[in-house]
Length: 491
Image (tube, rainbow, N blue to C red):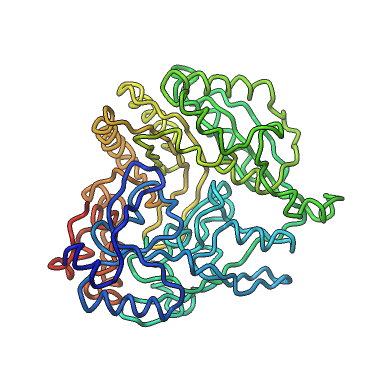
């Protein structure tokens, strides 16, 4: 079925759907259901006409995870109701289109905080589960899926299932992190984290090199609840991987005399102006002239030497939860400084014993290719029980690359060469960030038995293989073999 026929069948015109990194985009018909009944009607039309269906929230995946070229994209942002929050237990029940921002704004004044958050507050809860998002506290508190008590999911066949670690446990462990291939979340029950202050206590440390970064995290990880490192990817030699590390811990009960005040929304809101004068919404325009190799080398060096001067030397400073966790939201639309080509993020997860060697090698490959990441972020991780997990007992390294017409082919080639280094070390990758993996590579990441079991579950829940996206067709074409005659080519 071609796109023109889908437009007629669904009564909607096509639109351009873009990845968060703005480097991938494709045409699709987008629908915005508002109820389970709307979803069931859409799924019925999809089954009748053989229309491939993909899901999308706020579109925060860097690559093509929420695109479905020349097919149907179901936008769930109108499923945005928080149904309940128990102020005594912190148990939240919400629809999948509810954003992290909605959750923390609803919960922080009651003394609760989302247990795992991404670097931005704008992803939806359904998207967080589909990618099984991790945060700066992964080695200690795990992924978002480990805090889900249960969920309800509508299959493409129109059946609504209840899933939890006890009820339909296999589907529970596969749908979380299953990138939307098994069904659509319709209701999620999430256990929030009890907090006793609107602040966390943050320690900043200047880091000499990658080995120092890893050693500091390993030595101090039991002392803190959050660990995240910034890496200057421009330096080499003894300074390879230098940067700054931020470690934070929750404030204990009774240690914040102004707890009632710090848990107010006014304390959590990020400032909208710089120095109270210039709107932050303007800042990306001023950033654009320096988003190049020369400008970003200078900016990274300035940041490092500033870190050396300003490190807290073991003394914590108080910072609001939102300010510490949502650093990406400090400058609205900062990603636009990467236009016209956008950006990709290459994030690898490597076992602890090999992380220094492997991630150091990746930086050196970037130097030899003259393709330097403008931002590097380092985190500690632990395994989790989900079927297609990205997690390892080790470290992740996320690198942001500017995409241009001139460097795009070279950048994708570099990513494929880095894939080999990561895979040889037993590493993994993450669906929410990926834009470059190939099918052969993806099939080397997860055990054959795990991929086969996921495929069996998909065939049972989606017998015609209609749930698909550009990402799934790129990485796992065999998931859609039952729909081969009706599935479009990825655009």
